[in-house]
Length: 248
Image 1 (cartoon, rainbow, N blue to C red):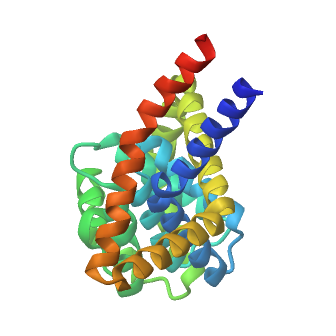
Image 2 (tube, rainbow, N blue to C red):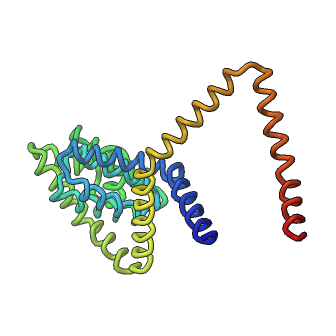
Image 3 (cartoon, rainbow, N blue to C red):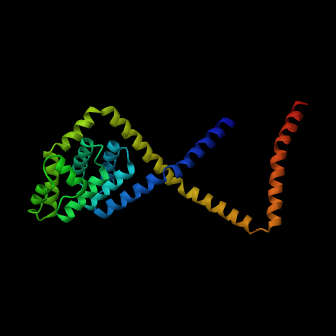
């Protein structure tokens, strides 16, 4: 049973290692799920938008922020993916200057204030549309749904959706590989979430043990340290004696 036991211990160690390794991703996804629920958008749909951003940008943190900004802007399940494709196309068109989180953030601010601003305004200028021209058109629209549609039509007519679709089609192997890697990260995060209570119990037990040791008198602490040192020193010698006994 030794090989089996070794395998189980190795698997258990690897599983425990996922808890600290995926902490940041789990924290980001928990925020995304909460924002989706608050916005009345399905968690699965929000995760799909996150994955599309993350595959293109290789940045899960910015991708969560970007989707959250779109949710705050009022994009619903029916048009969220279109907004993601349009902004991703813009990022792919100008990868050295435009950042996906900043694009989504400035788009949310643009819809809130009625004037194109930030990197979304910069995008409009780069596309030849002009931030002022866009703002003038946006000011003629009163309801939020029509304003969002105006944004999507602008991104579509400027070729940003086509840019995104062309990138996906021309890099299918790369996209599939990134998708698989991202799904693996999320699966590891789910595993870490499952065993998190075990790690918490172990941490609390270790804390109690340390508190008990710290509460001992200096003489008691010294005695325990001495005993542990003796055990550590005797261990190898005992192993040698056992091997000699077996040989005899």
